Structure formats: C-alpha cells, structure tokens
Amino acid sequence: MRKDITIEKFYRKDGERMNVSALSRQFNCCWLTMDKRIHPEKYKHERKRRIYTSILDEFKIIINQKLENDNIPATGIYYLLKSKYDYKGSYSTVKNYVSKHKKEIIKNLTIRFETIPGYQSQVDWKEKMTLKSRSGIEFQFNIFLMVCGYSRYKYIELTSDRSQQTLFKCMINSFLYFGGTTQEIIFDNMKTVVDHAKSDFKKVVINSKFNQFSKDALFTIFTCRSYRPETKGRVETLAKIMNRLKAFDGEFDGWDDLDKIVKDLMHELNYAEKSQATNEIPFQRMEKEKEYLIPVNIDLLKTYINTQITYKVSKESMIKYKGKKYSVPTYYVGKSLSVKEDDEFISIYYNTNFVCCYNKNTAKRFNYKKDDYLDILQKSAYTDKTIEEIAQISLNNLSSLNDINIEEE
Image (cartoon, rainbow, N blue to C red; front, side, top):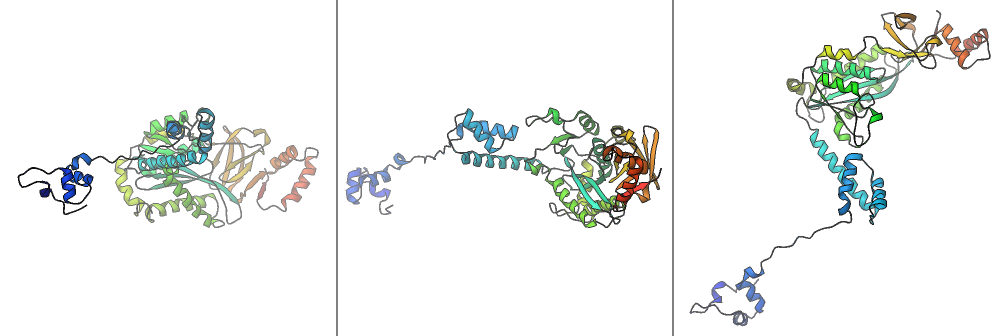
C-alpha cells in the first residue's frame, strides 16, 4: 500500500474534497486504489469460510446410532448404507469415519472414568492360570481382581472356580479388606453378572440375583463393552501383573502355599510399590479414599453365600477341589457333593451322608479310590472285560504315571 497517499491530501485548500479521478491523476495511480483509500468502508467484507461437505453427511446420524448402541463394525455399516440407504461412496470413507468416531467415544468414556475418591472400582478375573508344585502336581486356578479407581488399592484372591457363589464370597472379602464399597463397580459381561440370554448389544440385562446383591451392598453396577478397554484399564493392568506368579512354577508346596504367595503379592502391590499412574503407593491414597467409601452390611451379604459350597461330579465320576481331582462312586455322577477339610483329611459328603475321604498329605493331581478307579475303567473303556482283568491292566498302567494316587477304601 502506498504510504504517500494520506488523508490530508484528499482535500483542497478551501476544504472541499477532490474527486477520485483528480486524485488518481495527481498520485498517478488507478482510480480504484484511490477510491479504496477514500471509502474503505465500501470494500470491507467478511471472509467467507469454506464449508466442507462429505458424501457421508446425510448418513452420519445412522452411523452414530449404530456405533453408540450396537457396536457395529465398519464393514457392517458400509453394507447397510449401500444396500438400504443407496450410499454411493467408498468403504474407506466409512471406515475412516467409524474409526475416528470410536476414538471420540473412548476418549469421552476415559474422561468419565478418571474418578474421584470413593466413586468407582473395577472387577475382573485372571482366568485359568496353571502352575506346578514342587512335587510336580499341576494346579489350575483363577485370581479374583478388584481395584479402587482413585487410590489403585487392590484386592486379589486365589479361587478354584469363577461361579457366582465364589464371586459373592470374593466381593464380600474385598469389602472387608477395603472397609466399604465404592458408589459404582465396573464389570465386563461375565455370565455371573449379566443375563446373556436376555441381553443384546442395545440393552444389557443384569442377572436378577446379582442385581439384588448390588442393591443390598449399596453399589451401582456398570458393565463395559469389549471394544472400550479404557473403561476398565486399571483392573486389566492388574491382570497383567498376575503373570508374576509364573515365576513360582515349581516353587510352592500345594494350595495353601500358593494362597500365601498370592496374599504376599497383594501386600507388596498395596504397601511397597508405587502406582505408575499416580506415582504414589496405593496405601497412602487409600487413607484418603476410605473416608468416601460406603459402609456395607456384611451379615446381610453373607446370606448370598451357601455355608457349604457344593461341587458337581463330572462324567468321569470326580470332583475338582483346590486344583486336584477326587473320585467318588459312579452313582454320584451329575450330583452335587460338599467337602469338609481338616489338617489331615478331605472328606466328601452327599447332603449329610458321608461318601469317602482322602489323605490330604498324599494327594496328587488325580486321586482315586481303588474300587472307583476300576468301576470307572469298566464303564468307560473296558466294558468287555472283568474286574480282575481290568485290575491287572490298571496296575500295569499306573507304574508309568506319576500324577495319580490310588487309595484303598
């Protein structure tokens, strides 16, 4: 812009303004340049923003509904739009939009789950871990996991199954350990919490018994979907930490010793190690979070637990108890039996009727009563042989097996 054209030069000595043509000749410039200097308001205009459009614009409401309610993958949405809504665009356009929108959903949920003290905790299982004891007996077990969202204070428990009874027991133990419960607890779609037969992607139906348990325990159930891992990332991180137990393969002496190892790990995580997320020891933050936990009526919750846990007899006429299997007479196949244990023996009952007992200290991975073992073989593999013939065959086989224990009646 020319700096020699100033507003004082637009006027004659008598005060009248010179016309545009005269001024342009005087300054040797285009009349339009001069007119812009004299009447700048005539040339002011707002810059128009470019409006970007997409071939997906008219379909975005449909796509968003499918992602929010049904978790439909991009391929499914593409074929829906193509076949039902006359979409003419490419699959990659749909895929890019779906990917971006899912990230927004996850981001919003992640913000939601950055919790305040006492608001939220997360529950999950570390499933079907397998370790061998010093004597070579293989133990398959599960670890119940629960994490308080604010403090990262953890409760973990060794279990032999993942039944609803076991879930109730573990949660009651966690409430005792924490000193209460959080307002909300997050679960995945585990069958002990969600009634899968009545649920779909649009609506999750909570198991009626577990729903009543949550009301009596004064917490709200929240279930997360599989493609949104951030909603229960704390407990999934804890599940990965449980891989530390693999170091004890061949380094423990049975179920009780393994249970102690799990408890020691829990103490280490809560009282010695700093959380990577908070850079604090969980116990220190738990001192603050405890003030916000909801007190729980433990006596009321204990009514959800049978005083005597039962074990269903498998088709092989055995029950599984603390990682080992014990035979019972084939008459009990399909029935539920209970177990009582003392320092020396494991006793098995049907209702109040005694069935058999095993020496706890000599138990191996598979434990049989001699008569049960022969009866099982006859009914499963040697239907054409006599008991005497089967006995001789079994004696030959047993000499090569280290994980089987046969007891006399």
